[in-house]
Each structure stands twice: as structure tokens, then as C-alpha cells.
Length: 300
Image: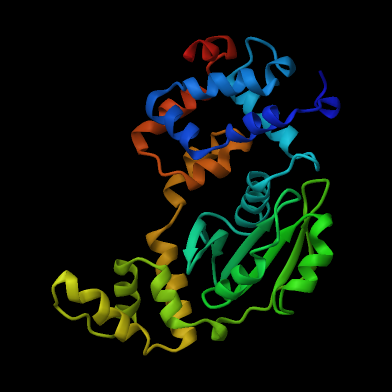
């Protein structure tokens, strides 16, 4: 059956979406097989759309094509658009790093790209609620220089009515393109050092302070956090922000994954970039992608 005419029931849509979960990709990478994949393949009805001897990668690509349809789009499709159109399209893994589910206060930023500045992308898909949007933006403006909302047409008016004028508004179009409706303003001076400190890891805070020629005290671990925090809040907003960008581009670099990710199906590159995998598991994941569907269904 053609993807253009395939209609999914709710349980089928759930199964298709779960194919792109970090837990499934991690299982495939560690074991070279996944009973969960076999079960979801059966539940999703995707088997009707591919040949029995097609490789597993074809099923992932078919699932991705279905999820790109306007009525079915959810968070993963938006993250994939950010990955391919922004991270890999405008930048590269040599010059930029992407952070997913980055903790900021009581919120988790969907996607953050660090290059010469910091840009956060909060996803509000067609299926999402905007109930928490105001609080999320309030938190992100304290840590990131550029704040963007990426959404569907159904939310555009509500988004404009909710967010400040310095927040960018992006639209994911029917053709899977990102259209800029309003450009975000780059304002590192708006960020707050203590909020940045609370969002990064302690060893990263140490590196930032060292770059600023601030001495790191020799203290027990129980006292180190408070001492570093007290020093960090003496930085200006721009110093703390720019230090965060420079240090995290190194500590969280994705460059070692560049060659591996380029060999994966386009559809799973986003989840592979955001799922910690051991280097020795890369070959198993690639082998799993090339396994014929008829064999993969025996993983049950």
C-alpha cells in the first residue's frame, strides 16, 4: 500500500513512533537484535509497505516517511528537522554541537545547538499542548542567547500571543522545511550566570572558570559545589554564556560520531546522535540495519 494513502490507527501510530526511541536503538546496538523492534514492526502495519527481504533500515525509512505526514507529526520528526536542516544543514559536527533534553530549571530544552552562540529550539508539534510554553521560555531566556519555538500551523497564532518579541518563531512546513516566521534576537547579555551554572556539569564549570583565570580551590567534594558556584556568579552574563558555549562545544562534541552516523539510515541519525552508544556497538547497529525483515521478525 502506498504511504500516501496509508491511514494509521492510534495504536499503530504509537508503534511507529516508538521505533525511534533511544531504548530500542540502544538495544539494537548492544545486542544486534531487538524483540521490541519485532513486536513494533508487527503492531505498526509497516510490513504491508515493504518487501519481506528488504533490510530493517527500509522499515525505519518507511516509518519516518509516515511520521512526516502533517496529521502524524510528533516530537521526533521536529528533532530530525532541526538535526538535518540546522545542525547538519547550516553547520556541521566540526563546528557545532547539539544537546537534546538539556535540563534548565524545571524544564528540559528539546534541542540546543551551540556554535558561535547558543540557540534553543522548543518543539510544539501539532499534537502538543502549549500549557507550559510560557514557563519554558521564561527558563530558557536565562541560559540561551537565542530562543526559538518550532511549531505547526495550528499553533502559530497562540505562540505569537504567548512568547516575548525576542523569541523566534519557526514553522515546520508540509514539505519538511523549516520556515522562519520571526527571527530570534541573539542576546547573551540577557542570560544569568547562576542559571547557567545550575544547568551544566561541575567539571564544565571548572573549565569555564579556568578560562577566565579564576583559581579553582582545593576543597573536599562536599564543599566544592558551593565554592565554584560563588565564583561563577561573579562572571558577567556574556562571560558565563560565551564560556558555556566554548567549553560545551568541546566536552559534548559529536564529531567522533560523524563517520558512524553518516552510514546510518537518514531516518535514525537524529536518535543515534542523542543516544550514548559504545564505539564497539556501532558495528552491531549497522549490521542490524542490514538484517532482512524476515530474519528480524524472528527476534521475538
